[in-house]
Image (cartoon, rainbow, N blue to C red; front, top):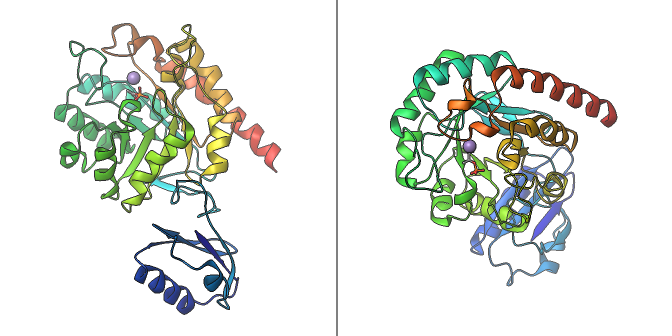
Length: 337
Ligand code: PEP
Ligand code: MN
């Protein structure tokens, strides 16, 4: 349920309303927008008398929210959220480009890629230290050593780092990691999501392989319900009957998620396609569709990559893609204005 307040509502009125909501056993979600303050009531609102709430002098309207996701819902927070990632911002015009190898393989590999992608304009460095592999016999990542290598590259380049977590017990290792990724396979690992909800870390939540957009937003809700609102959504393709591409990039997810939610939405054309030659066209399409950023796998020697070499761009290919992405971003800015 939301209560939209009249423009002149005072701080004292807002606080007394919030106190009353909490006294009813509910959580308060305050959205102070440019023009209006919206008070969200989260929890079992069946006992709340809508008419009573609506009769308060400073309340304009009261609406029940039918969607099961509340904190992630745009009705709770009409303005786009801007999420901090290290010293960069994501969302509402702040376009993020996360680039780097699928897995951290060595100090030299990460250092070389980090320097190159920074030069080309990447805003964050990615690299998997804990890898969710389909086969238990495949490379599982360098684990703690991998995180150390990323931190070294962060100190050297100043780029915030993004890395995937698979087990909440590993959280202490992620203390200096700027953005914690929850991979597609863990999108519905609810215990992990709840633990991340207790932190204030920025979470990059990837869409599950067979998750509907509603399920995706419910997973974001798990994190937000714990008090962590720092969530970035990532569309990375879904399973369909098509086998030519690794997954099918659901680009309509971008405008749909923007309509339903205030959270930033980025697109990963690497895992969505599985093929380096398809990364640029899908990256350009994502930028044109209004994505708030991209996540692109880049490797200095894709042929010998420990993981996902076929979909990895070389630093030179990434540089060209970045130049073209900027052209699309400039063009859509012109359309918007
Ligand atoms: C990744 O980003 O390296 C990854 C494993 O992605 P996904 O979870 O989308 O498959
Ligand atoms: Mn990968």
